Image (cartoon, rainbow, N blue to C red):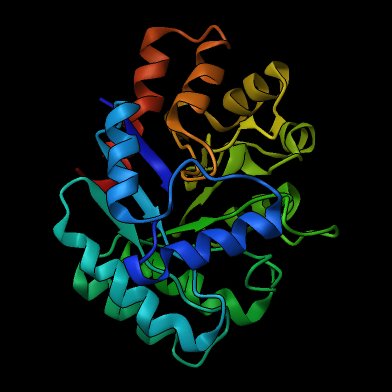
Length: 266
């Protein structure tokens, strides 16, 4: 079994335009056209059983439509959709409550596309509300090929979030900080509420094996989640990198699906 904790898809009417815009901004080519049907097709090719689809509201006025789309995906048994709120918006708390009532298990923040610092106190009530409701908070972590430094979600600040909000479960994408892996290996330590996903670790910029192993040791093998970042990278990419680390079969099983099943209660 394989659960991909980091993928993206868009409403059919918006997918082509969204993928074209994101591809141009990041200078990378997608592996699919961005529709849910395209994601399912690649999942079948890469033997992925379930994908967590992460959505982003890049401005307050997008929250309702983005989250309506997320809620619509609940009917697909192979998709676990996450919603999104715009940091500090007037409706962020009510949207989190609406998502929870609908059965959504988490939300996604992207500090670059949403232009905020993860330590911005305006967002703290949202972190707290997610903790109260048992909802997961997933972050894009580290750099982003579509933006220039300074970035807003480095390992030091993300690690601090876990200390400030111990009742909230956080997932930090891209092994805790895209292109900041050596820093992350020095900074991250075990927190019961911290998870890292393996998305895009073997595409564009490649994490070195030593940093990957140190991060896994620091955070704990029960807190590593398999992820790809489809359509920007495929599950086969992350899988190849993990299998090159010399991890035991038992460890790989935890990463591939056992940790995700426990976290998602499935």
